[in-house]
Image (cartoon, rainbow, N blue to C red; front, side):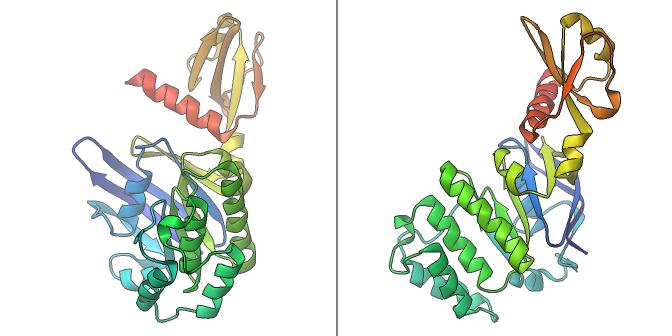
Length: 283
């Protein structure tokens, strides 16, 4: 079963268009939703959840249509953005407000997460570090037994230790509670550790959506002399020249053993960089 099925999503602004966004996420896995700042990650998430009205396309979450079962869907998901709320109020006050919206709120689970994350309910929201504030938002989402977490830039602004700790929490949630997680990020190193699937959006369009392993296997880094470019110039995605020759990205099916061409496995960051370079050269 897929926890998320998005087909043909479109949203148009004056200077930006979300075009035919289509992807799916199987239940019980983590998907990293990646792209540069301004690529369309937040617009996609907001359109999926009817926070922003989309122009066309369909969205099914946990097997239900967002247009006909929005209330039921939102009772069973946790949506967390990088921004907290009610900054001047104490944690316990915000919790009392939040839990009124959920009939299946479980205070025992909530208290266990406060202890696990070492969150003081007497502190104001603005007294929490960014990492602690994100953990608090996760505690809220998990305390009504959310089956799906949709997280918009949850690691943005966190230091490396806090980010690593949060990613370990994500993995534990999937393994122990079979929670499904979609989280958007432009920090691709986060995905190397915990993501099972990757959906890559660029300029409002999906470039790739597949398992992380399939994505990495689909491409190869290529290096060679400037003279070697002639062999692959028609198929190379993009490249950068230097004093010794060139570095670039190519589809694995287009690998040729000619001249001094050498190949290596790319990182997710490499794939993003070279696709961005292609976009820049086509503008």
